[in-house]
Image 1: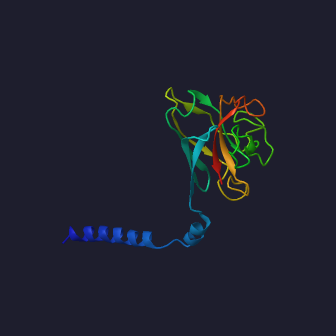
Image 2: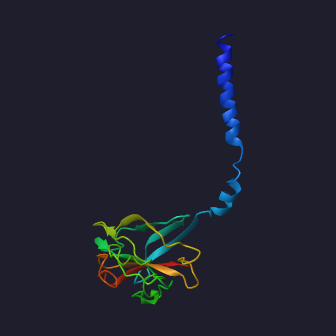
Image 3: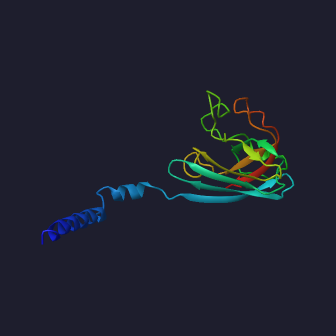
Length: 185
């Protein structure tokens, strides 16, 4: 009997803590209403000829946007390439100039390393392997939806440039020509 009492007391403690864990918190309804579900978006990445060379997939969370870029073998020249979000969702011309300048609502200077930047369109560079393929996952504070979001009235575009972005030089870090585009609408 003396062994049974401590065991029963221990079981009672576990049962009580389990019951407490199942009770909803007083503010749980507020937290659930405030948390928005992550929105997902996917689009093909096309070159100047209109060929699909890869995909872009995004998930928009409460604090950050997570984007994955996958370029198929032969899709881009090997080496580093600048990537930016551009202000207009238009990849219709072969130089992708209809996508306009970077997303930049607060008129910041270009460059992830610029003390007066970055602008909202600035992203890390993409490294393309010798076979022309690439895989990357990057984050951005620029949201997919909502105020200042990429999916606004005229959409936006992910642009991949011919050269590396040095993250300081104005206006695009020396990234050069636009060689690939994905619509965000």
